[in-house]
Image (cartoon, rainbow, N blue to C red; front, side, top):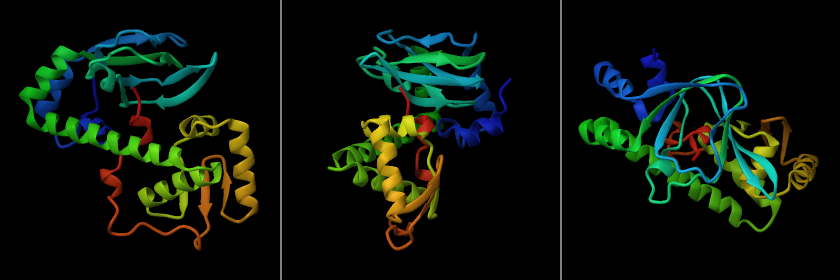
Length: 237
């Protein structure tokens, strides 16, 4: 059984859908339980289903140069598999693993497309969802285009300061994930973070950053509201 209010509040794909319609949509999903450390999706596997985490937690791993880098963690009511399922090249680049016993709801591409045609609000949500992901990926490209690690870190912090409308920023990344996001070595990232802290750019502990007011400008009316921004935990495969 799904908590419909929680589902709507935690996943943009289901927002503003009335109870009866949402019940019909969720009845189209099948369920499966995966034991801890089970691969839900394997690298190079053909994917033709969208997955929703009902309970538990899953991790997306990029097997880069024989090292497994954590790309993202997906928790309750997060989704994955959508952009591969809806693309012409539906082969996964990642391993997706259950970090604990986890229940997944999943729906085939064929059934998903039928629902998108039948329910306009669901279709509108999907378009907005994918558009926000595209915007987020453009943000990532902007970060990667910076010439130095310092500039890349600054760009990330500036973005999340805008998004959260505060100089006290909570990043949705641990250091491994941030290094992977910026395509840099973790030790290089750690050195630069320490150096920037010594220079007074910010103070930080784990994912929590307090930004220097003189260097970071708060969000203004030209930026989108938090409600129109996408969570990093949604940016998956």
